[in-house]
Structures are given as C-alpha cells and as structure tokens.
Length: 307
Image (cartoon, rainbow, N blue to C red):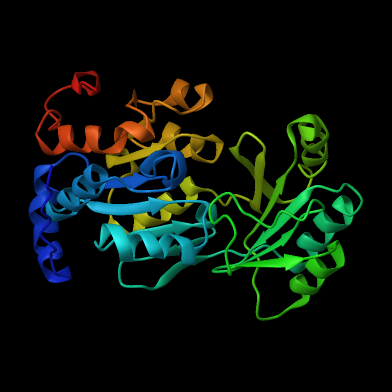
C-alpha cells in the first residue's frame, strides 16, 4: 500500500494549531519512543508517522518523551516525523521546544555523580553516563552498546571507573543521567545497590528488564510535561501520552489520557486510561486515528473511546 504525506510549513502548522485547539479536547500528544512509537527494530512505522503528522496538521501539539539523548531523538524528527514538536529527552532532564530553544536543562551535579561512582566502584556493573548527545560507556564485559544506539560513534568507551570520573571532571560535558545494567543473574545484586542510592537526591526509574536510570531529584518525563503545560497554557488533563515501561509510569498515571501499549508492563497498564495495541501493531496510530476521527470529542466519557 502506498502512503502519501503532505509536509506542512511551520506557519501552516501554527494556523492549524488554532483550529485544532478549538476542535479537540485532547490538545497535546506525547509518545515514548522505545517500546511505544518504535517497533522492535527501532523503526517508526508509516502508520505511526502518518498519525502524528495528521495530529500536528490538525492543530495538536506533539512531544517525543524519551530517555534517549538529544542526538538520538533528533534523528527521528529529521528522518521520519518531519513535524515541529517538543523533544523531552534524557527522561525529562532536557526539553527542547519546537523553535529549538532549551527550556529545561537539569544535569546531575558533579559531587552527586562522584558519590554514585564511589559507591559503585567495585561492583562490576555496566555504567553509562549520558550527556546531551554523547554517552560514556563502562562495561567490564567490554560490550559498548547502549539500549537505544547499539554500537555508535556517539558511545565513548571507558576502560575503568576512573575514566568515568575524568569525564565527570570535564567542564564541557554535562551529565544528565547515569544508567546501570547487569546480567539477569546479578539483577538482585544491582537492585540492592540501587536501593542504597535512595538516600541521595535522585530519581531512579526502570526503562528495561535489566536497565535502570538515575536522574536528578524530581526530574521525570512528567515534570517535563508539566513545564510544557505551563509554556503552552494547556492543562495536563488535556494531554494524551503513550508509554510502556517504568520511566513512563508517572506520565501515564497523571496526564488526562494515559495510554499503555499492549506490550507495556502490568504496572503501567494498571494506571492507564486505556491499553492500546502493541508497538509492533501501530498501537499509537490506532488511538490517534480514533481521536482525530471524532470518536472522542469531549461529549462522551473516556470509556467511549474503543481501542
């Protein structure tokens, strides 16, 4: 099947925004990327691309909400989506508005990173320091991949914890997130280690079965969306957001219309407004299409939107 897309200028999107703002009860669409907008091969399907383009063309605001770096998220906007939108990256530690301005910038402090590294020095866990565009990867097994980039020139290799410390000392490299992962047999040990960090001013979330992420205190995707709510003067009750894993939990629970993917963990499904189809079945597009088709226009209850 051939799909044809009409690319709109930014001014055209703004004009449609005014019309769409008046028409739809839902005024912002936010999507996680991995396990949500992306399929299992880290691709955005034509159906998902089309649904987001139609939403923006209809006047809705769009935001990607990801744990990925800005460099990684930018690629999807440039190569696939080709629409204006917010970029919530690094779990909300950085937010870029549609004009390209940084409206949130919340790196971890140097001393806090040093304390985490000191407590982890002899644990032999994989540790990744996430900068804005680059990551510094320490892995005792010498597997330099990250869950979102695989092997990439944007993954810098560290052969020791001391090399991570050197990166922390680099005044030109802000660190926004620290990631820990371990083999399945060492997960209980890793979780115990992470519990020892809860006394620190941090936010700990889980973005995969064996992948945990540490941000500064009170930094989450939800906190980023709350800032966007202020900037756009759109109540969070009129946000529809999609997600699948632990770092999406607060977002799905607190926005007006939180949609869990069919492949989401049960914890996220339990707090969602609706459960859509999986990320491999265009679950994002399925719901957005029904919204744009008027199945939910504010006159019916939430339960009337049929997935």
